[in-house]
Image: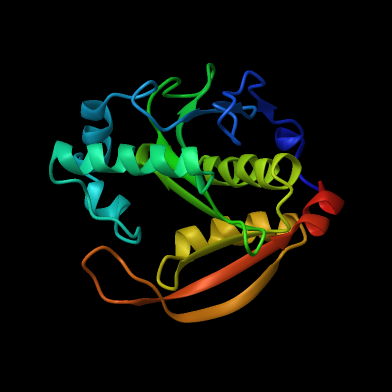
Length: 215
């Protein structure tokens, strides 16, 4: 069974008529806000995705490169808005809630990408290094899975990471095992980083039935 930390997800109920997704979500320790200019400025998000002493380490295994200009960040926001409106992906910024170290700060971003034909969603989480080691990735996975299964009625949620990314693998394994999911194995040349060579990837999944049984 899951930890009581994850028993309830608070979905904002005042949704816009053209959106499948909640504008905000809250777990015990985290607040999720729609990734858009209403919740974070282009300049703030650019600084978050482009600078900092740990940026190379933080982005070593993600599929995008650290942002080079404000135009990169503007393009990200435009793409996130398009995917949101089309129902293809829900992108959120992540902030620790009051009582947490760094409460209110921009800790990272997270995404639920949806393949409606397969009735499947894919989880992705990016956190800055000062927020590593707190179990926040697990809370992100839980919030997005709750959205996928209880609000969107998807049948499968998937997560994957580069074979060399041991930190992400441990985080994903912990969540998947706690909810009765499965490790599918290594997918060859599955991940293609921006401007890089294809990488092998670990692949994990949970079905709606498994998730709700272990909830």
